[in-house]
Length: 292
Image 1 (tube, helix red, strand yellow):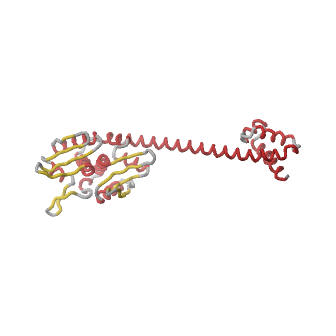
Image 2 (cartoon, helix red, strand yellow):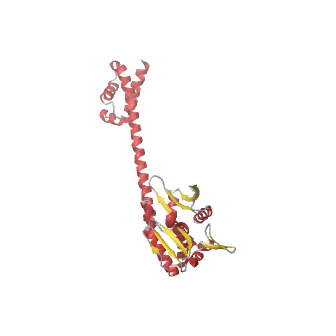
């Protein structure tokens, strides 16, 4: 995971005060990062994450909501038997299809019925399968195994006036946000305020760098123009130098020959005249050469 992703997940991996929101949070975590297994020991849930804070959060939520302890490893969490089957129904992950039990392909509506629960569900999805980066381009994404889930997530995010899109990548369905402002809005929505600040600082630094580069490029372009104009003027002056009789034009011609890389402003300081006057005299000298 990228550094910004780790910071954002560590910041928001917390149990909430409301158990309806904790239910939504746990449901999203298992739905996005977990798998279900059936054995003689009972139903099991296995969850994988590179973030230790996410694994600890899942353990804390299961214990708080169902009084059951699981096993937390370095990169995984596992729980089996006990109230696990009941939990999966409560979380809207398992449901009945007639007389058959099956997993919900998308989001079970009752889990996100309240706005606060919807926010926490999105937080759980980001914790389970999300990543965010702002190195070269702004990008936030969450990856799902079913199209129904990805489509439901796009709709859920859209309910908060944030535009998210879906694409397919290696048989996975990816929900992504590209706009820097939209990513900031999403991170703020799920409570990752420090990550928003860091993202905005990165954006500000990028703007400063872009402005600086443009100024440098502009200065280089202007320098090239000065050199091109100077070469034309010098060629013209050499052509007519011996025939220049006007003292002011002669003084200007000599100044240009002695200082081929000087701008009009620099020549104006030497001659103690205005920039416009220098430009006029050099143009006059060029015209004289063209008439020859």
